[in-house]
Length: 104
Image (cartoon, rainbow, N blue to C red; front, top):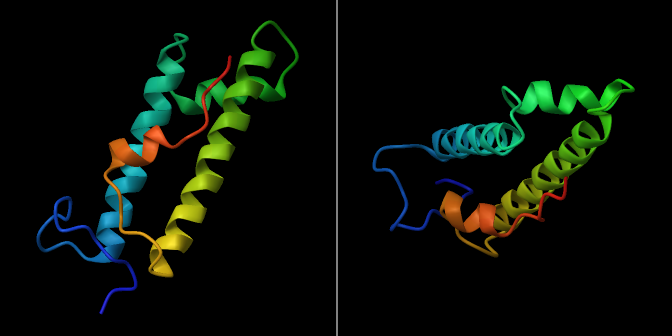
């Protein structure tokens, strides 16, 4: 028995809870990449890397890195709630709509 309750409307038949989490993790990384690309960065890594270096892109990099960390922390809280049976696994679209806004 899985610790994670999966909403049958979004469950992928035959996937374990770990596989579902891996699928969400990939969607999350793609989401972060797409947000970074909005400011013409290659991906989440090149964008957040700018936070560590003084220069014209440091403020953007810092804002992005802090936002990404806040989203990740939120995901850990959602996973905890799922494991405790307080909510079912949302679709990624539902989950990402709950993230804080990215303010560049």
